[in-house]
Length: 580
Image 1 (cartoon, rainbow, N blue to C red):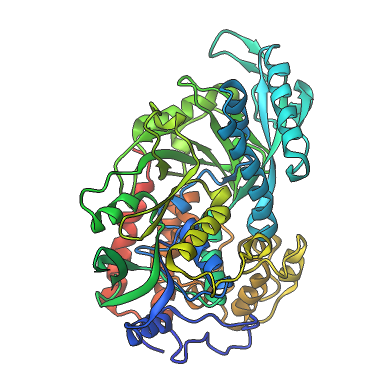
Image 2: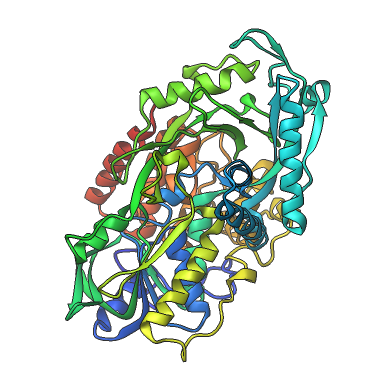
């Protein structure tokens, strides 16, 4: 193995556990290929490895195009790993379409419904349908929300998950025992019942990683921790980039027939790298979230606060054994490590408190994070909450295709449209097939069934000292899909079945698997994106850090100084998840 721990032949080590059908090319192998072939042109070069960028790489590669994607940090390190974890079906767009008589909002509803169903089908292990309660404490709210949800059901048709319903107060208390039967924040109001609707929920960063791996399986060259530092031009046209491996400092050139800017919040920064006078086309908006203990809500139902004091909505949702609450929405500066403010945290707590029997305490907060949404600019929008979440595809004067805006739900459609435009601009129609991603399962989806955890639980051996417990088995199945069997075999084969920390189901084998099969290059990659410990429990992430560095260091052949730097960098990163 080389200094990055990759196999010299660009494949995963041939251990007995390696049952994956096609080994992925390693990061080192792809970088070496890029450096050997600097003068060769890709059909498409994608700058950015978030949801849209990785989606573009999958789309282009599965059409038969040669595709390269460069991500400056890690897959899901930015916006795509810091969402509210909902695959929205566009219910709020329908409200705006009706009350504002805006057909554009209705278009967003149809698109979101179709893409939500596609996403849930293509990544079943990372997604689920989640019932969400809208409690009604005024009699007029019952017909108001009921009519709205029934209109939504009608629009959804076959694209819907489950029909919405009305539940009486007593039934709601059984389904959501933490929900307050009486509110006292605005006089004393007794619950009249609740409208329950269904939306999609997912693990955003793990889906992003799965997309990157899917792109690599399809033949794309996709590399994380590789930043574009310069654009190369032929006359006025951008024809390539100068890229820097952020782990080694080495630089190299990549050329392509057409280039897609899918850099999220950094969209305008890249555009201005080409033209310093370019007008901005996106407006960053920050959304804060908090993580609370599991006892704040049931494991199978969420809550929507339909209207906060500033007119927005706030969700309280079960997620990966905890509860998350959010979000806020305000204009912000662009940074890779946004931090929620004290005021935002207090706003979220104050918004959910009247709806819960649970004493909402700041001391209960397990983690705090903020994500930046690259909203598409609309000059007529007075604030970010009223801006369109639709996306923009623009062809720059230099020929670069820029895509910004949108949301996770519609990432696949956005990628399809961006690649369509790149094919047009690059004259690639004769080389490109039709888009295939509408029915393309991501890595882990193909052999996944809802009872896969049973097979995982029955895996055993000396390394496990018996089969993994049900909680660990379910965690592996819903994190890795059919690759959970690979992780379980690795745990037994390499004696890595121990939990990293007692109260979380993450096991040591996942660290090694992440390095070998998921392009995990740093401790933060693992704690924040290959697993979600940083988002779920900041103290647990800090407790797991030394062992993570030990395992990654052994796998990737880190020096003593590199290990010390990893500890330091991770602690600095994790500090941004602490409540002020």
